[in-house]
Amino acid sequence: MRALLAALLLVTLAPRAVWSEPARTPLAQVLPLRDLSGRTWTEDDLAGRVVLIDFWATWCAPCLAELPHQKRAWETYYDDGFRILAISLDQTDLATLKRWLRIQEVPWPQIHDNRGFEGPAALAFEVETLPRSFLFDRAGRLVAADLRGEAFEATVGALVGLGER
Image 1 (cartoon, rainbow, N blue to C red):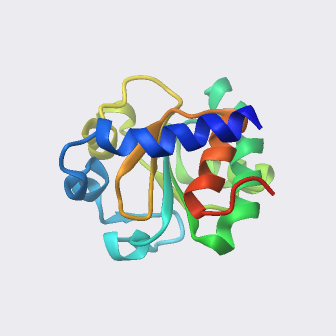
Image 2 (cartoon, one colour; image 1 turned 60 degrees about the horizontal axis):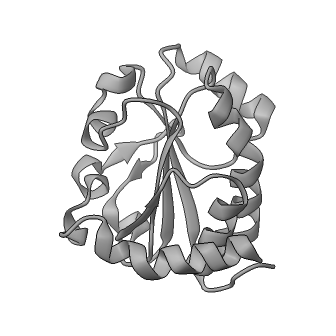
C-alpha cells in the first residue's frame, strides 16, 4: 500500500518537475530505433502508451535484479497499454545477446547498441551508469527515472489507471 501511495504522489507531482518541454523529450530525439527483430519503433508506436525506456546490460547485476519486476509489470499491464523498450549497452555480438534473452525469457523489444555509453540513445538520455530507466506517461511526459522494485510496479499500475491488482 505504501508503494502505491508513493507512486500516486510521484505521478501527481513529477510531470511538472522534469522536462519543461514534454513533447521534445530524449525519447523523441532518439526515435526511430530498430529492435533485434528488425522492427522500427517510432513515436506513433508508443503514442498513448505508458512506456519504460530501460538501459541495461547482461553484465549489470542491478539490471538483472529488476527483471522479475519488469516481467511482472509487462505481464500485468501489457494489455492496458504498458510497453518496455529496452536498450542493451552490451558490447557483444548479436547472437550472444539473443541467446541470453531467449534463455532469460525476456519478451519485450530490445535494441542493441554495442557502442555502449557512446551510442546516440545513451548520449541523449545522458546515461553514464547502469541500470538507468525512464518511465513516460501516456502523454509522453517523463514521470520517473530509475524506479525499482515494487515502487516501479505500483507506478506503472497507477499510470495505466489500474492501481494494484
